[in-house]
Image (cartoon, rainbow over all chains, first blue to last red; front, side, top):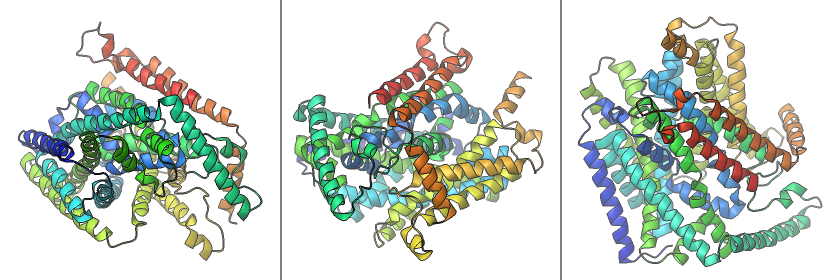
Length: 535
Length: 78
Protein backbone atom coordinates (compact mmCIF):
# COMPACT_ATOMS: atom_id res chain seq x y z
CA UNK A 1 0.00 0.00 0.00
CA UNK A 2 1.23 3.50 -0.87
CA UNK A 3 1.78 5.68 2.20
CA UNK A 4 0.47 9.19 1.68
CA UNK A 5 1.49 12.38 3.48
CA UNK A 6 -0.52 15.57 4.04
CA UNK A 7 0.94 17.06 0.86
CA UNK A 8 -0.31 14.07 -1.14
CA UNK A 9 -3.83 14.45 0.23
CA UNK A 10 -3.69 18.14 -0.62
CA UNK A 11 -2.79 17.36 -4.25
CA UNK A 12 -5.65 14.83 -4.46
CA UNK A 13 -8.11 17.29 -2.90
CA UNK A 14 -7.10 20.04 -5.36
CA UNK A 15 -7.59 17.65 -8.27
CA UNK A 16 -11.06 16.62 -7.06
CA UNK A 17 -12.20 20.18 -6.37
CA UNK A 18 -11.04 21.40 -9.79
CA UNK A 19 -12.74 18.42 -11.49
CA UNK A 20 -16.06 19.01 -9.76
CA UNK A 21 -15.72 22.76 -10.38
CA UNK A 22 -15.25 22.25 -14.13
CA UNK A 23 -18.11 19.77 -14.27
CA UNK A 24 -20.58 22.02 -12.44
CA UNK A 25 -19.50 25.13 -14.34
CA UNK A 26 -20.06 23.37 -17.68
CA UNK A 27 -23.35 22.04 -16.31
CA UNK A 28 -24.67 25.58 -15.88
CA UNK A 29 -24.78 25.87 -19.71
CA UNK A 30 -26.83 22.70 -20.22
CA UNK A 31 -30.38 23.64 -21.20
CA UNK A 32 -31.60 20.86 -23.50
CA UNK A 33 -31.39 17.17 -24.27
CA UNK A 34 -28.97 17.89 -27.11
CA UNK A 35 -26.73 19.80 -24.67
CA UNK A 36 -26.74 16.84 -22.30
CA UNK A 37 -26.08 14.14 -24.91
CA UNK A 38 -24.04 15.96 -27.58
CA UNK A 39 -22.80 19.08 -25.74
CA UNK A 40 -24.90 21.13 -28.16
CA UNK A 41 -22.46 20.05 -30.90
CA UNK A 42 -19.97 22.62 -29.66
CA UNK A 43 -16.87 20.62 -28.70
CA UNK A 44 -13.46 21.60 -30.14
CA UNK A 45 -11.19 18.93 -31.63
CA UNK A 46 -8.47 19.16 -28.97
CA UNK A 47 -10.93 18.52 -26.12
CA UNK A 48 -12.53 15.57 -27.90
CA UNK A 49 -9.10 14.19 -28.86
CA UNK A 50 -7.76 14.18 -25.28
CA UNK A 51 -11.11 12.89 -24.03
CA UNK A 52 -11.00 9.93 -26.44
CA UNK A 53 -7.66 8.86 -25.00
CA UNK A 54 -8.59 9.56 -21.36
CA UNK A 55 -11.80 7.55 -21.66
CA UNK A 56 -9.96 4.63 -23.19
CA UNK A 57 -7.63 4.31 -20.19
CA UNK A 58 -9.63 3.30 -17.14
CA UNK A 59 -8.38 3.18 -13.57
CA UNK A 60 -8.13 -0.59 -13.69
CA UNK A 61 -6.31 -0.36 -17.03
CA UNK A 62 -3.74 1.97 -15.54
CA UNK A 63 -2.83 -0.56 -12.88
CA UNK A 64 -3.66 -3.62 -15.02
CA UNK A 65 -1.53 -2.65 -18.04
CA UNK A 66 1.46 -2.02 -15.76
CA UNK A 67 0.80 -5.40 -14.12
CA UNK A 68 0.48 -7.15 -17.46
CA UNK A 69 3.71 -5.55 -18.71
CA UNK A 70 5.35 -6.76 -15.51
CA UNK A 71 4.12 -10.29 -16.14
CA UNK A 72 4.34 -10.66 -19.94
CA UNK A 73 6.48 -7.78 -21.19
CA UNK A 74 5.95 -5.00 -23.72
CA UNK A 75 3.52 -7.03 -25.88
CA UNK A 76 0.64 -5.49 -23.92
CA UNK A 77 1.49 -2.19 -25.64
CA UNK A 78 -0.06 -3.65 -28.80
CA UNK A 79 -3.42 -2.71 -27.30
CA UNK A 80 -2.50 0.99 -27.45
CA UNK A 81 -0.47 0.95 -30.66
CA UNK A 82 -1.60 -1.36 -33.47
CA UNK A 83 -4.74 -1.98 -31.45
CA UNK A 84 -5.78 1.69 -31.67
CA UNK A 85 -3.91 3.90 -34.10
CA UNK A 86 -4.76 2.32 -37.49
CA UNK A 87 -8.46 2.05 -36.58
CA UNK A 88 -8.49 5.66 -35.32
CA UNK A 89 -6.99 6.93 -38.58
CA UNK A 90 -9.50 5.02 -40.72
CA UNK A 91 -12.33 6.15 -38.44
CA UNK A 92 -11.14 9.76 -38.69
CA UNK A 93 -11.41 9.98 -42.46
CA UNK A 94 -14.19 7.49 -43.32
CA UNK A 95 -16.68 6.66 -40.60
CA UNK A 96 -16.70 9.49 -38.06
CA UNK A 97 -17.35 12.28 -40.61
CA UNK A 98 -20.14 10.15 -42.11
CA UNK A 99 -21.80 9.66 -38.71
CA UNK A 100 -21.36 13.36 -37.91
CA UNK A 101 -22.97 14.40 -41.22
CA UNK A 102 -25.89 12.05 -40.57
CA UNK A 103 -26.66 14.05 -37.42
CA UNK A 104 -27.22 11.00 -35.24
CA UNK A 105 -27.02 10.86 -31.44
CA UNK A 106 -26.31 7.15 -31.07
CA UNK A 107 -24.81 4.38 -33.21
CA UNK A 108 -27.99 2.24 -32.85
CA UNK A 109 -29.90 5.24 -34.29
CA UNK A 110 -27.71 5.03 -37.39
CA UNK A 111 -28.47 1.31 -37.64
CA UNK A 112 -32.19 2.06 -37.77
CA UNK A 113 -31.76 4.68 -40.48
CA UNK A 114 -29.59 2.34 -42.58
CA UNK A 115 -31.26 -0.98 -41.70
CA UNK A 116 -34.22 -1.42 -39.37
CA UNK A 117 -35.77 -0.76 -35.98
CA UNK A 118 -35.32 -4.39 -34.75
CA UNK A 119 -31.55 -4.20 -35.38
CA UNK A 120 -31.34 -0.80 -33.65
CA UNK A 121 -33.18 -2.17 -30.64
CA UNK A 122 -31.09 -5.35 -30.47
CA UNK A 123 -27.75 -3.49 -30.64
CA UNK A 124 -28.94 -0.74 -28.26
CA UNK A 125 -30.13 -3.39 -25.81
CA UNK A 126 -26.77 -5.18 -25.90
CA UNK A 127 -24.83 -1.95 -25.37
CA UNK A 128 -27.14 -0.70 -22.61
CA UNK A 129 -27.03 -3.93 -20.61
CA UNK A 130 -23.27 -4.16 -21.06
CA UNK A 131 -22.65 -0.55 -20.06
CA UNK A 132 -24.99 -0.70 -17.06
CA UNK A 133 -23.34 -3.89 -15.77
CA UNK A 134 -19.87 -2.67 -16.64
CA UNK A 135 -20.42 0.49 -14.58
CA UNK A 136 -20.82 -1.70 -11.50
CA UNK A 137 -17.80 -3.79 -12.46
CA UNK A 138 -15.68 -0.66 -13.02
CA UNK A 139 -16.72 0.82 -9.67
CA UNK A 140 -15.90 -2.37 -7.80
CA UNK A 141 -12.65 -3.14 -9.60
CA UNK A 142 -11.47 0.42 -9.12
CA UNK A 143 -12.46 0.46 -5.45
CA UNK A 144 -10.44 -2.71 -4.91
CA UNK A 145 -7.41 -1.10 -6.58
CA UNK A 146 -7.99 2.07 -4.58
CA UNK A 147 -7.90 -0.03 -1.42
CA UNK A 148 -4.63 -1.68 -2.43
CA UNK A 149 -3.20 1.69 -3.46
CA UNK A 150 -4.07 3.94 -0.54
CA UNK A 151 -6.09 1.80 1.86
CA UNK A 152 -9.57 3.29 1.30
CA UNK A 153 -12.11 0.56 2.21
CA UNK A 154 -14.03 -0.88 -0.76
CA UNK A 155 -17.56 0.35 0.01
CA UNK A 156 -16.61 4.01 0.67
CA UNK A 157 -14.44 3.80 -2.47
CA UNK A 158 -17.44 2.70 -4.57
CA UNK A 159 -19.70 5.39 -3.08
CA UNK A 160 -17.18 8.22 -3.44
CA UNK A 161 -16.36 7.40 -7.08
CA UNK A 162 -20.03 7.11 -8.05
CA UNK A 163 -20.85 10.34 -6.21
CA UNK A 164 -18.06 12.42 -7.78
CA UNK A 165 -18.36 11.12 -11.34
CA UNK A 166 -22.17 10.92 -11.10
CA UNK A 167 -22.56 14.52 -9.85
CA UNK A 168 -20.87 16.32 -12.72
CA UNK A 169 -22.19 13.86 -15.34
CA UNK A 170 -25.73 14.48 -14.04
CA UNK A 171 -25.44 18.25 -14.33
CA UNK A 172 -23.08 18.70 -17.25
CA UNK A 173 -23.65 15.68 -19.50
CA UNK A 174 -21.25 15.11 -22.38
CA UNK A 175 -19.62 18.56 -22.20
CA UNK A 176 -18.74 18.04 -18.52
CA UNK A 177 -17.47 14.56 -19.31
CA UNK A 178 -15.25 15.84 -22.14
CA UNK A 179 -13.85 18.93 -20.38
CA UNK A 180 -13.14 17.04 -17.14
CA UNK A 181 -11.53 14.35 -19.32
CA UNK A 182 -9.09 16.98 -20.61
CA UNK A 183 -7.96 17.73 -17.06
CA UNK A 184 -8.00 14.02 -16.23
CA UNK A 185 -6.01 13.15 -19.36
CA UNK A 186 -3.34 15.72 -18.56
CA UNK A 187 -3.09 14.59 -14.91
CA UNK A 188 -3.08 10.92 -15.89
CA UNK A 189 -0.49 11.13 -18.66
CA UNK A 190 1.61 13.69 -16.77
CA UNK A 191 1.55 11.69 -13.52
CA UNK A 192 2.53 8.46 -15.25
CA UNK A 193 5.28 10.05 -17.36
CA UNK A 194 6.71 11.57 -14.22
CA UNK A 195 6.82 8.13 -12.60
CA UNK A 196 8.52 6.76 -15.74
CA UNK A 197 11.13 9.54 -15.72
CA UNK A 198 11.97 9.02 -12.04
CA UNK A 199 11.95 5.24 -12.46
CA UNK A 200 14.30 5.40 -15.45
CA UNK A 201 16.59 7.73 -13.54
CA UNK A 202 16.71 5.23 -10.66
CA UNK A 203 17.43 2.31 -13.00
CA UNK A 204 20.13 4.31 -14.78
CA UNK A 205 18.44 4.97 -18.13
CA UNK A 206 16.94 3.02 -21.01
CA UNK A 207 20.05 0.88 -21.70
CA UNK A 208 20.43 -0.37 -18.12
CA UNK A 209 16.63 -0.94 -17.93
CA UNK A 210 16.77 -3.24 -20.96
CA UNK A 211 19.81 -5.02 -19.54
CA UNK A 212 18.19 -5.62 -16.16
CA UNK A 213 14.85 -6.70 -17.65
CA UNK A 214 16.59 -9.15 -20.01
CA UNK A 215 18.59 -10.58 -17.09
CA UNK A 216 15.47 -11.06 -14.97
CA UNK A 217 13.61 -12.56 -17.94
CA UNK A 218 16.38 -15.08 -18.62
CA UNK A 219 16.37 -16.14 -14.97
CA UNK A 220 12.61 -16.51 -15.04
CA UNK A 221 12.68 -18.52 -18.30
CA UNK A 222 15.28 -20.90 -16.97
CA UNK A 223 13.27 -21.45 -13.80
CA UNK A 224 10.13 -22.03 -15.86
CA UNK A 225 11.82 -24.49 -18.22
CA UNK A 226 13.34 -26.42 -15.33
CA UNK A 227 9.92 -26.63 -13.70
CA UNK A 228 8.35 -27.77 -16.98
CA UNK A 229 11.05 -30.33 -17.70
CA UNK A 230 10.32 -31.92 -14.34
CA UNK A 231 6.64 -32.26 -15.29
CA UNK A 232 6.84 -33.19 -18.96
CA UNK A 233 9.64 -34.25 -21.30
CA UNK A 234 8.57 -31.94 -24.20
CA UNK A 235 8.49 -28.21 -23.44
CA UNK A 236 5.04 -26.69 -24.01
CA UNK A 237 6.45 -23.62 -25.74
CA UNK A 238 8.33 -23.59 -29.03
CA UNK A 239 11.70 -22.14 -29.95
CA UNK A 240 10.20 -18.85 -31.03
CA UNK A 241 8.40 -18.43 -27.73
CA UNK A 242 11.55 -19.15 -25.81
CA UNK A 243 13.58 -16.78 -27.95
CA UNK A 244 11.06 -13.91 -27.58
CA UNK A 245 12.27 -10.98 -25.53
CA UNK A 246 10.42 -9.00 -22.88
CA UNK A 247 10.59 -6.09 -25.29
CA UNK A 248 9.03 -7.94 -28.24
CA UNK A 249 5.78 -6.55 -29.56
CA UNK A 250 5.34 -9.47 -31.93
CA UNK A 251 4.92 -12.68 -29.99
CA UNK A 252 4.76 -16.17 -31.56
CA UNK A 253 1.65 -18.33 -31.97
CA UNK A 254 2.68 -20.79 -29.28
CA UNK A 255 3.29 -18.21 -26.56
CA UNK A 256 1.77 -18.93 -23.17
CA UNK A 257 0.82 -15.22 -22.94
CA UNK A 258 -2.60 -13.93 -24.12
CA UNK A 259 -0.93 -11.99 -26.98
CA UNK A 260 0.01 -14.37 -29.83
CA UNK A 261 0.44 -12.36 -33.04
CA UNK A 262 -2.61 -13.79 -34.89
CA UNK A 263 -4.84 -12.65 -32.01
CA UNK A 264 -3.22 -9.21 -32.05
CA UNK A 265 -3.36 -8.74 -35.82
CA UNK A 266 -6.65 -10.40 -36.75
CA UNK A 267 -8.57 -10.12 -33.48
CA UNK A 268 -7.36 -6.82 -32.08
CA UNK A 269 -6.17 -4.68 -34.99
CA UNK A 270 -8.72 -5.76 -37.60
CA UNK A 271 -11.86 -6.46 -35.53
CA UNK A 272 -11.97 -5.35 -31.90
CA UNK A 273 -10.17 -2.07 -32.45
CA UNK A 274 -12.41 -0.86 -35.31
CA UNK A 275 -15.36 -2.14 -33.29
CA UNK A 276 -14.25 0.01 -30.38
CA UNK A 277 -13.30 3.22 -32.21
CA UNK A 278 -16.10 3.12 -34.79
CA UNK A 279 -18.92 1.32 -33.02
CA UNK A 280 -18.60 1.94 -29.26
CA UNK A 281 -21.16 4.56 -28.25
CA UNK A 282 -19.06 5.74 -25.28
CA UNK A 283 -16.24 6.58 -27.67
CA UNK A 284 -18.04 7.77 -30.79
CA UNK A 285 -20.53 9.97 -28.92
CA UNK A 286 -17.97 12.68 -28.10
CA UNK A 287 -17.00 13.06 -31.76
CA UNK A 288 -20.71 13.39 -32.63
CA UNK A 289 -20.69 16.35 -30.26
CA UNK A 290 -17.82 18.05 -32.15
CA UNK A 291 -18.57 21.57 -33.42
CA UNK A 292 -17.82 20.71 -37.07
CA UNK A 293 -17.08 17.76 -39.32
CA UNK A 294 -13.44 18.87 -39.44
CA UNK A 295 -13.25 18.95 -35.62
CA UNK A 296 -14.66 15.42 -35.47
CA UNK A 297 -11.95 14.21 -37.86
CA UNK A 298 -9.19 16.23 -36.19
CA UNK A 299 -10.15 14.84 -32.76
CA UNK A 300 -9.50 11.28 -33.90
CA UNK A 301 -6.18 12.22 -35.52
CA UNK A 302 -5.17 14.08 -32.33
CA UNK A 303 -6.15 10.98 -30.32
CA UNK A 304 -4.07 8.76 -32.62
CA UNK A 305 -1.02 10.99 -32.12
CA UNK A 306 -1.48 10.96 -28.35
CA UNK A 307 -1.91 7.19 -28.36
CA UNK A 308 1.73 6.86 -29.44
CA UNK A 309 2.92 7.93 -25.99
CA UNK A 310 0.37 6.03 -23.88
CA UNK A 311 2.32 2.74 -23.63
CA UNK A 312 5.32 4.73 -22.40
CA UNK A 313 3.12 6.14 -19.64
CA UNK A 314 1.26 2.98 -18.64
CA UNK A 315 3.31 -0.08 -19.72
CA UNK A 316 6.90 1.06 -19.15
CA UNK A 317 6.32 1.51 -15.37
CA UNK A 318 5.55 -2.24 -15.30
CA UNK A 319 8.89 -2.98 -16.96
CA UNK A 320 10.71 -0.69 -14.52
CA UNK A 321 9.02 -2.51 -11.64
CA UNK A 322 10.10 -5.84 -13.20
CA UNK A 323 13.69 -4.62 -13.30
CA UNK A 324 13.67 -3.23 -9.74
CA UNK A 325 11.32 -5.64 -7.95
CA UNK A 326 11.21 -9.04 -9.69
CA UNK A 327 9.27 -11.91 -8.20
CA UNK A 328 6.16 -10.08 -6.98
CA UNK A 329 3.38 -12.61 -6.38
CA UNK A 330 0.66 -10.31 -7.69
CA UNK A 331 1.72 -8.53 -10.92
CA UNK A 332 -1.04 -5.95 -10.41
CA UNK A 333 0.89 -4.85 -7.33
CA UNK A 334 3.82 -3.82 -9.53
CA UNK A 335 2.74 -0.23 -10.06
CA UNK A 336 1.70 0.53 -6.45
CA UNK A 337 4.99 -1.03 -5.28
CA UNK A 338 6.97 1.12 -7.69
CA UNK A 339 5.08 4.29 -6.78
CA UNK A 340 5.53 3.71 -3.05
CA UNK A 341 9.25 3.16 -3.50
CA UNK A 342 10.34 5.81 -5.99
CA UNK A 343 8.03 8.80 -5.75
CA UNK A 344 8.51 11.45 -3.06
CA UNK A 345 5.67 12.92 -1.04
CA UNK A 346 3.47 15.18 -3.18
CA UNK A 347 4.24 13.26 -6.36
CA UNK A 348 2.67 10.15 -4.82
CA UNK A 349 -0.48 12.21 -4.41
CA UNK A 350 -0.18 13.26 -8.05
CA UNK A 351 -0.02 9.62 -9.10
CA UNK A 352 -3.07 8.74 -7.01
CA UNK A 353 -4.82 11.71 -8.63
CA UNK A 354 -3.77 10.23 -12.01
CA UNK A 355 -5.35 6.94 -11.00
CA UNK A 356 -8.55 8.71 -9.91
CA UNK A 357 -8.50 10.66 -13.18
CA UNK A 358 -8.28 7.46 -15.22
CA UNK A 359 -11.04 5.89 -13.15
CA UNK A 360 -13.44 8.83 -13.29
CA UNK A 361 -12.90 9.52 -17.00
CA UNK A 362 -14.19 6.03 -17.82
CA UNK A 363 -17.03 5.90 -15.30
CA UNK A 364 -18.42 9.30 -16.38
CA UNK A 365 -18.26 8.34 -20.08
CA UNK A 366 -20.09 5.06 -19.65
CA UNK A 367 -22.64 6.72 -17.37
CA UNK A 368 -23.41 9.45 -19.91
CA UNK A 369 -23.43 7.07 -22.89
CA UNK A 370 -25.66 4.49 -21.20
CA UNK A 371 -28.09 7.31 -20.34
CA UNK A 372 -27.90 8.56 -23.95
CA UNK A 373 -28.71 5.13 -25.35
CA UNK A 374 -31.62 4.56 -22.97
CA UNK A 375 -33.11 8.01 -23.48
CA UNK A 376 -32.74 8.11 -27.27
CA UNK A 377 -33.12 4.48 -28.31
CA UNK A 378 -35.84 3.44 -25.86
CA UNK A 379 -37.54 6.40 -24.13
CA UNK A 380 -37.70 8.70 -27.15
CA UNK A 381 -38.12 5.92 -29.72
CA UNK A 382 -40.88 3.96 -27.99
CA UNK A 383 -42.39 5.98 -25.13
CA UNK A 384 -42.25 9.68 -26.09
CA UNK A 385 -41.55 10.12 -29.81
CA UNK A 386 -42.63 13.78 -29.58
CA UNK A 387 -40.67 14.65 -26.44
CA UNK A 388 -39.27 18.20 -26.54
CA UNK A 389 -35.70 19.12 -25.61
CA UNK A 390 -36.65 19.96 -22.00
CA UNK A 391 -38.31 16.57 -21.50
CA UNK A 392 -35.29 14.82 -23.01
CA UNK A 393 -33.00 16.72 -20.65
CA UNK A 394 -35.07 15.69 -17.63
CA UNK A 395 -35.31 12.10 -18.82
CA UNK A 396 -31.55 11.96 -19.51
CA UNK A 397 -30.74 13.30 -16.04
CA UNK A 398 -33.20 10.92 -14.42
CA UNK A 399 -31.63 7.94 -16.23
CA UNK A 400 -28.12 9.15 -15.28
CA UNK A 401 -29.14 9.29 -11.62
CA UNK A 402 -30.85 5.90 -11.79
CA UNK A 403 -27.81 4.34 -13.47
CA UNK A 404 -25.47 5.77 -10.84
CA UNK A 405 -27.63 4.26 -8.07
CA UNK A 406 -27.89 0.98 -10.00
CA UNK A 407 -24.11 0.88 -10.48
CA UNK A 408 -23.53 1.35 -6.74
CA UNK A 409 -26.04 -1.41 -5.96
CA UNK A 410 -24.61 -3.74 -8.59
CA UNK A 411 -21.04 -3.12 -7.42
CA UNK A 412 -22.07 -3.89 -3.84
CA UNK A 413 -23.81 -7.06 -5.06
CA UNK A 414 -20.65 -8.10 -6.92
CA UNK A 415 -18.64 -7.87 -3.71
CA UNK A 416 -20.59 -10.92 -2.53
CA UNK A 417 -19.68 -12.99 -5.59
CA UNK A 418 -16.61 -14.79 -6.85
CA UNK A 419 -13.89 -12.68 -8.52
CA UNK A 420 -14.46 -14.51 -11.83
CA UNK A 421 -17.41 -12.19 -12.38
CA UNK A 422 -15.02 -9.56 -13.83
CA UNK A 423 -13.91 -11.91 -16.56
CA UNK A 424 -17.51 -12.75 -17.39
CA UNK A 425 -18.40 -9.11 -18.01
CA UNK A 426 -15.27 -8.52 -20.08
CA UNK A 427 -16.28 -11.54 -22.13
CA UNK A 428 -19.77 -10.08 -22.61
CA UNK A 429 -18.32 -7.31 -24.75
CA UNK A 430 -16.60 -9.77 -27.06
CA UNK A 431 -19.96 -11.56 -27.56
CA UNK A 432 -21.58 -8.74 -29.48
CA UNK A 433 -18.86 -6.26 -30.43
CA UNK A 434 -17.63 -8.33 -33.42
CA UNK A 435 -21.17 -8.84 -34.84
CA UNK A 436 -22.14 -5.21 -34.16
CA UNK A 437 -19.12 -3.79 -35.99
CA UNK A 438 -19.59 -6.26 -38.87
CA UNK A 439 -23.15 -5.09 -39.63
CA UNK A 440 -22.16 -1.45 -39.08
CA UNK A 441 -19.20 -1.60 -41.50
CA UNK A 442 -21.14 -3.54 -44.12
CA UNK A 443 -24.06 -1.14 -43.79
CA UNK A 444 -21.90 1.93 -44.31
CA UNK A 445 -19.79 0.50 -47.13
CA UNK A 446 -22.16 -1.66 -49.21
CA UNK A 447 -25.56 -0.87 -50.70
CA UNK A 448 -26.40 -4.52 -51.46
CA UNK A 449 -26.40 -5.56 -47.79
CA UNK A 450 -30.03 -5.72 -46.65
CA UNK A 451 -31.80 -4.98 -43.38
CA UNK A 452 -33.22 -8.49 -42.98
CA UNK A 453 -29.84 -10.10 -43.62
CA UNK A 454 -28.09 -7.75 -41.16
CA UNK A 455 -30.60 -8.55 -38.42
CA UNK A 456 -30.27 -12.33 -38.79
CA UNK A 457 -26.47 -12.13 -39.25
CA UNK A 458 -26.07 -10.13 -36.04
CA UNK A 459 -27.61 -12.96 -34.04
CA UNK A 460 -25.60 -15.58 -35.95
CA UNK A 461 -22.46 -13.71 -34.87
CA UNK A 462 -23.56 -13.47 -31.23
CA UNK A 463 -24.39 -17.20 -31.26
CA UNK A 464 -20.95 -17.95 -32.75
CA UNK A 465 -19.03 -16.08 -30.06
CA UNK A 466 -21.16 -17.59 -27.29
CA UNK A 467 -20.59 -21.10 -28.69
CA UNK A 468 -16.84 -20.51 -28.88
CA UNK A 469 -16.88 -19.18 -25.32
CA UNK A 470 -18.67 -22.35 -24.19
CA UNK A 471 -16.28 -24.61 -26.07
CA UNK A 472 -13.28 -22.98 -24.43
CA UNK A 473 -14.57 -23.48 -20.89
CA UNK A 474 -12.85 -26.26 -18.95
CA UNK A 475 -16.07 -27.47 -17.30
CA UNK A 476 -17.86 -27.74 -20.65
CA UNK A 477 -14.95 -29.48 -22.37
CA UNK A 478 -14.78 -31.99 -19.51
CA UNK A 479 -18.53 -32.57 -19.66
CA UNK A 480 -18.47 -33.39 -23.38
CA UNK A 481 -15.22 -35.35 -23.13
CA UNK A 482 -12.92 -33.04 -25.09
CA UNK A 483 -10.32 -30.32 -24.47
CA UNK A 484 -10.90 -26.51 -24.44
CA UNK A 485 -10.90 -25.12 -27.97
CA UNK A 486 -8.38 -22.30 -27.35
CA UNK A 487 -5.08 -22.81 -25.63
CA UNK A 488 -4.29 -19.24 -24.57
CA UNK A 489 -5.58 -17.56 -21.42
CA UNK A 490 -8.72 -15.40 -21.92
CA UNK A 491 -9.14 -15.82 -25.71
CA UNK A 492 -11.57 -12.85 -26.13
CA UNK A 493 -9.75 -11.70 -29.24
CA UNK A 494 -10.36 -15.00 -31.00
CA UNK A 495 -14.11 -14.98 -30.18
CA UNK A 496 -14.35 -11.57 -31.80
CA UNK A 497 -12.56 -12.60 -35.00
CA UNK A 498 -14.78 -15.61 -35.60
CA UNK A 499 -17.99 -13.83 -34.61
CA UNK A 500 -17.08 -10.96 -36.95
CA UNK A 501 -16.39 -13.37 -39.80
CA UNK A 502 -19.56 -15.40 -39.15
CA UNK A 503 -21.63 -12.20 -39.16
CA UNK A 504 -19.95 -10.80 -42.26
CA UNK A 505 -20.18 -13.98 -44.34
CA UNK A 506 -23.79 -14.75 -43.34
CA UNK A 507 -24.82 -11.12 -43.91
CA UNK A 508 -23.40 -11.07 -47.45
CA UNK A 509 -24.84 -14.52 -48.22
CA UNK A 510 -28.33 -13.75 -46.88
CA UNK A 511 -28.40 -10.39 -48.65
CA UNK A 512 -28.60 -12.17 -52.00
CA UNK A 513 -31.82 -13.90 -50.90
CA UNK A 514 -33.58 -10.89 -49.38
CA UNK A 515 -35.09 -7.78 -50.91
CA UNK A 516 -32.90 -4.72 -51.48
CA UNK A 517 -33.44 -1.83 -49.06
CA UNK A 518 -35.38 1.29 -50.02
CA UNK A 519 -33.54 4.33 -51.45
CA UNK A 520 -34.31 6.15 -48.18
CA UNK A 521 -32.15 3.60 -46.31
CA UNK A 522 -29.45 3.47 -48.98
CA UNK A 523 -28.88 7.20 -48.50
CA UNK A 524 -26.96 6.25 -45.36
CA UNK A 525 -24.28 4.28 -47.19
CA UNK A 526 -21.12 6.22 -48.02
CA UNK A 527 -21.87 6.02 -51.74
CA UNK A 528 -25.48 7.01 -51.27
CA UNK A 529 -24.43 10.08 -49.31
CA UNK A 530 -21.82 11.14 -51.87
CA UNK A 531 -24.32 10.76 -54.72
CA UNK A 532 -26.79 12.91 -52.85
CA UNK A 533 -24.17 15.61 -52.24
CA UNK A 534 -23.13 15.49 -55.94
CA UNK A 535 -26.75 16.08 -57.00
CA UNK B 1 -11.51 -33.95 -30.61
CA UNK B 2 -14.29 -32.13 -32.44
CA UNK B 3 -14.05 -30.83 -36.01
CA UNK B 4 -13.45 -27.36 -34.55
CA UNK B 5 -10.43 -28.67 -32.65
CA UNK B 6 -9.04 -30.19 -35.85
CA UNK B 7 -9.56 -26.96 -37.79
CA UNK B 8 -8.13 -24.90 -34.92
CA UNK B 9 -5.02 -27.07 -34.61
CA UNK B 10 -4.45 -26.98 -38.37
CA UNK B 11 -4.75 -23.20 -38.40
CA UNK B 12 -2.46 -22.82 -35.41
CA UNK B 13 0.14 -25.09 -37.03
CA UNK B 14 -0.09 -23.22 -40.34
CA UNK B 15 0.28 -19.81 -38.67
CA UNK B 16 3.15 -21.17 -36.59
CA UNK B 17 5.06 -21.88 -39.81
CA UNK B 18 5.27 -18.17 -40.63
CA UNK B 19 8.60 -16.90 -39.29
CA UNK B 20 8.48 -13.91 -36.93
CA UNK B 21 10.37 -11.73 -39.40
CA UNK B 22 7.58 -12.46 -41.89
CA UNK B 23 4.98 -11.51 -39.30
CA UNK B 24 6.82 -8.28 -38.61
CA UNK B 25 6.72 -7.63 -42.34
CA UNK B 26 2.97 -8.21 -42.30
CA UNK B 27 2.48 -5.68 -39.48
CA UNK B 28 4.65 -3.14 -41.31
CA UNK B 29 2.87 -3.80 -44.61
CA UNK B 30 -0.43 -2.96 -42.96
CA UNK B 31 1.01 0.31 -41.64
CA UNK B 32 2.65 1.25 -44.95
CA UNK B 33 -0.60 0.54 -46.79
CA UNK B 34 -2.44 2.78 -44.35
CA UNK B 35 0.17 5.49 -44.79
CA UNK B 36 -0.16 5.33 -48.58
CA UNK B 37 -3.95 5.56 -48.31
CA UNK B 38 -3.72 8.59 -46.01
CA UNK B 39 -1.36 10.38 -48.40
CA UNK B 40 -3.70 9.64 -51.31
CA UNK B 41 -6.68 11.30 -49.62
CA UNK B 42 -7.81 14.46 -51.40
CA UNK B 43 -6.99 17.68 -49.56
CA UNK B 44 -10.68 18.57 -49.57
CA UNK B 45 -11.28 15.70 -47.12
CA UNK B 46 -8.38 16.47 -44.81
CA UNK B 47 -8.47 20.24 -44.44
CA UNK B 48 -10.79 22.64 -42.71
CA UNK B 49 -12.93 24.35 -45.36
CA UNK B 50 -13.11 27.43 -43.15
CA UNK B 51 -9.35 27.70 -42.66
CA UNK B 52 -7.01 29.74 -44.93
CA UNK B 53 -5.49 27.63 -47.71
CA UNK B 54 -1.85 28.32 -46.91
CA UNK B 55 -2.04 26.77 -43.43
CA UNK B 56 -0.56 23.35 -44.16
CA UNK B 57 -0.47 22.61 -40.41
CA UNK B 58 -4.24 22.33 -40.60
CA UNK B 59 -4.01 19.49 -43.14
CA UNK B 60 -4.89 16.42 -41.12
CA UNK B 61 -3.27 13.99 -43.52
CA UNK B 62 0.23 15.02 -42.41
CA UNK B 63 -0.60 14.58 -38.73
CA UNK B 64 -2.12 11.17 -39.46
CA UNK B 65 0.95 10.35 -41.55
CA UNK B 66 3.18 11.27 -38.57
CA UNK B 67 1.17 9.05 -36.20
CA UNK B 68 1.60 6.10 -38.59
CA UNK B 69 5.29 6.87 -39.16
CA UNK B 70 5.91 6.63 -35.41
CA UNK B 71 4.14 3.25 -35.47
CA UNK B 72 6.34 2.06 -38.32
CA UNK B 73 9.44 2.99 -36.34
CA UNK B 74 8.07 1.30 -33.21
CA UNK B 75 7.18 -1.95 -35.00
CA UNK B 76 10.51 -1.96 -36.83
CA UNK B 77 12.46 -1.69 -33.57
CA UNK B 78 10.49 -3.80 -31.06
